[in-house]
Structures are given as structure tokens and as C-alpha cells.
Length: 133
Image 1 (spheres, one colour):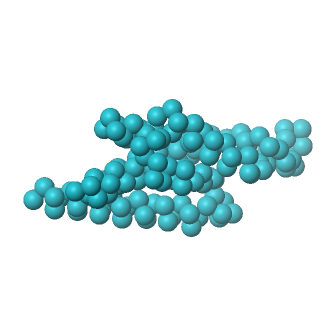
Image 2 (tube, one colour):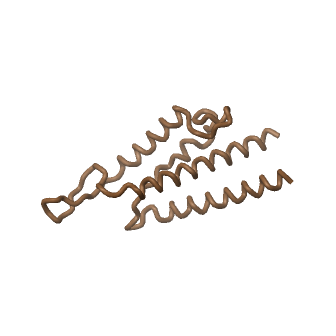
Image 3 (cartoon, rainbow, N blue to C red):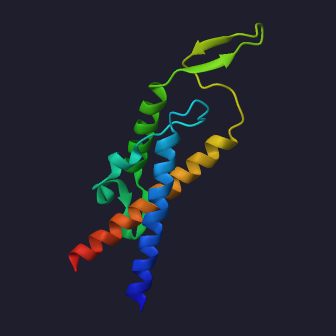
């Protein structure tokens, strides 16, 4: 019974992560999209032992993992240009700095991306364990 429940749970998680990732990818270039996608998954794929504490039964990134995330996010941000409104004029100007706004959206997205990353790492670990047996 435990294996059936675990399989059902894994299938459910995979389905939800796939739907979330699909939605994020589909809408990332929408005119009103207020987020960018940093493809951390590609940097972590197949490197769970190197970039996380998974060998200690901890799915969180280690220092190398945090460095990989930081480099990926930095690269993604540097690829974009931002627009902000000047206070002296009511016109838009181009800048390489992030526009001022409420950070609530960014925080929610960051939490969602982190949760998806954690779920992906869990799925990779479960798949690796299954392949060992």
C-alpha cells in the first residue's frame, strides 16, 4: 500500500509541477508579464549530489547550489532592460536597473519557483532511488 500511495503522490506532484512550469513558460513573454524566468532547473538537472545536500537527506542547495542559482538569476536579470518613469517628466526612460515597485509579486514568484525546484529535486532523488533498486 505504501508504494502505491508514494507513486500516486509522485504522479500528483509531477502533474502539478508540469502545469505550473507550463503556465510560467507560456506567459513569460506576455505584454503585461511582471516576471522573468531564470532557468535554474537546467543548471541543477543531473547534479543533485553536487549542488544540494541530498546525500544528507536535505533537499536544499549547498554553497555550490546557491552559487549556481545566483549566477543564473544574475545572468537572467542582466539580459533584460527595464523602464521606469521619471519624477520630473511624465515620460519613460530606459535603465539597466530594476524599476521601483511593490516587491510582493517578486517574492511570491520566488517562493513558487523555489517550491517547484524543491519538488523537482525530490522527484529526481526518488527516480534515482528507484533506479538503484
